[in-house]
Image (cartoon, rainbow, N blue to C red):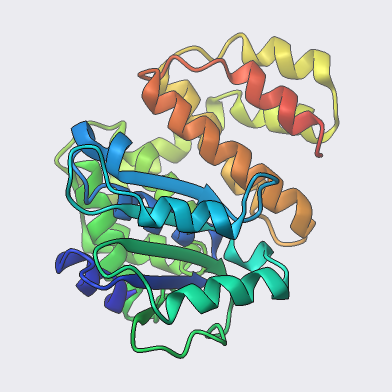
Length: 286
């Protein structure tokens, strides 16, 4: 993670980067951070995001994107996620490009992998491990809290680290819920109050109905979740539910993707998000 953040501060000057780790949340977060390096007004023209796991992906399309010139000039940034979904033959074509890339463009690739990816031994390629060492987690928690607009007491940082150190997605979810307190600094008393509020909330009743596939009860409870705080609480509860140990890998991955998409739509709609759509999709995979 440290190497990635250092390269990000420098503006990602290299022509090719490959970020990798086993945690889907960190890969998703890295993609967003790369996108944020470009001003919003020019991002539509200069940034292109491709999904290597999608039906429409092709190396030819990737090459066309990375070799194109943005309408407003400047540098073209092409993000390719889910590189691990490519078959060996197709991956070799991508690797061939990385040995002689376009010097004025940026190809930023993301791969789910616990080990350092092989086949990218080129001076043009910068490998970026996103996994965090134990001493990095508290620093990351503080940075995430700052990004949300508040600071944490050392006690809260230790509590999050002790409970969720191996699950950064859950830490991010907890921090979003803590942001609802609207305070510049969050202490353990705020955390205890939040937990108390959540125990009285019906988001977990909805989770139980969802896992029982009781669709009638799911949608009845969903109609009661209308405020932004309600939606954030529900997203946090859903994230925790589908990240539990023992959750089938395919269910975890599908649910994670649906929750990320819902989170982005919720932000785009200023919190007015139809949770019924998300719940209907989740009912199909539980």
